[in-house]
Structure formats: C-alpha cells, structure tokens
Image 1 (cartoon, rainbow, N blue to C red):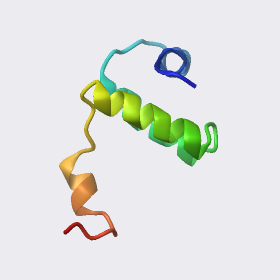
Image 2 (tube, rainbow, N blue to C red; image 1 turned 45 degrees about the vertical axis):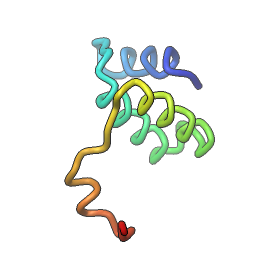
Image 3 (tube, rainbow, N blue to C red; image 1 turned 45 degrees about the horizontal axis):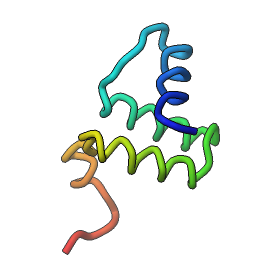
Image 4 (cartoon, rainbow, N blue to C red; image 1 turned 120 degrees about the vertical axis):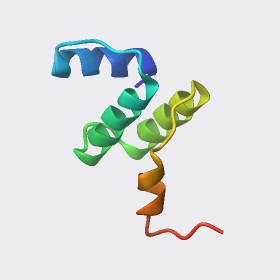
Length: 69
C-alpha cells in the first residue's frame, strides 16, 4: 500500500479527505492493529509519512514500555 491508497481508504472510511500526515499515520496504525495491513506495509507507510513531516505524539513516547536512552 502506498500513501495514495492510504488516503483513498481514509476517505472511504471517514467520508472526508485529508492531507494531514499525522492523521494518516494514526489511520495507518489503526489499520495495522486491525490486521488490514501487514507489518511491512505499515513500516513503509510510517517511513513515507515521517519523511513528509509526521511525528508520533509526545505522550505516546512517554507511555512507551520501551526505554529510551
């Protein structure tokens, strides 16, 4: 899946379109959690979205079980 397909799927499920990369990242995360996309697709989408400026929220990083050094 590419960003264009993700946007199309977002539009179909939400009845509006967006170019907000953070909203698309959240949508990709939900699609992965619900097994609509596999890990390989999810990682590629995250890389592309991060390259376009998407970021994970700070509270997401604070609540992570993975320690940051």
